[in-house]
Length: 469
Image (cartoon, rainbow, N blue to C red):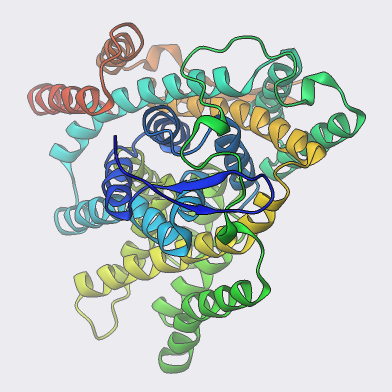
């Protein structure tokens, strides 16, 4: 067994065990390499590795951290990695976990953006995507089931998830409104002492490994470094603000208000504060501004960028890097187009993700101190149930666009929904998706194996027969 060190804590009398930092680096690198499938797949993958396999933290602590992250703007899976990294190894742990989570996607999308810009078409890449999308869809659907089995422990929670799905899929309700309403319902239920909202109440047996907090390496205690400390919080706030706002000010001063790099830094900094619901929730907002206001993209290129983000590791919000890349590529100024594009993509990623570290490092200490608050715990549990419905809505959206080339909107009785045009079904994609689902659900084939096999099949099929748009 791996050696661990410990430090005493106040409050519960438990010890907060810490994994050696060298081992943590390897684990977070593994998490980053496996971070395919959007938030559903990424969160489920982290749960499998961090909770079930490594037993760093327990089930309740994992869900408590996840519940907080779902309340924040930005990618909840990356923020969850920051939170857990911070729990285990203080600030440096959070910085390393969050940075590694983004790094593979940054490199992959940067390389694919170069291909996109230079060649204008990505036939071989599209062929790879054809196979990868089938695998990703199977992985996401599996993740929805996995997360649901952990969170939907009674009929009330199932009802909240269903209501969230219906609100989004049929009534186009704003994501923040769904989250707030679920939280209020849970808070009221917790205050009233209703069993359905109580941790461990009426849950029954759940499949999969359940790790109690007391049986995890971190234990049930509150580590000293997780307690709110005014001086430390002030230091984090100042350094974080300089890292986030400093480049924007410098660009504004030296390049002026209407330079493409200034526009990128300002636009995506504002976006970082309103990206509730992840990439899909802000897709139309970013696309409209990028195409109509700034002229960074041509119509339809936003979906090309989303395709890159969907089939590479890392948060789906990495699609913004592609937008910044193409924006600077088309307005390079005195720089070469590819150099300007590279800088534009890196700048976009910086101003998009720096706030994520701030939200966690400034807010998580207060969330840990409130972990035993029953009303708050009930509110966050209700939010997690709603998020299962939200992720299911995203999975359905993804399935429509992977398996069908045409989708139309139907409406009536105050509702509207996207439905596929059955004649536009992509038969090869459907067959490959079904095969991937059988591999995932029936034979429990590993994620990388499924991704690799589907990518090779997709490449062979696409280069032989072509890809149907």
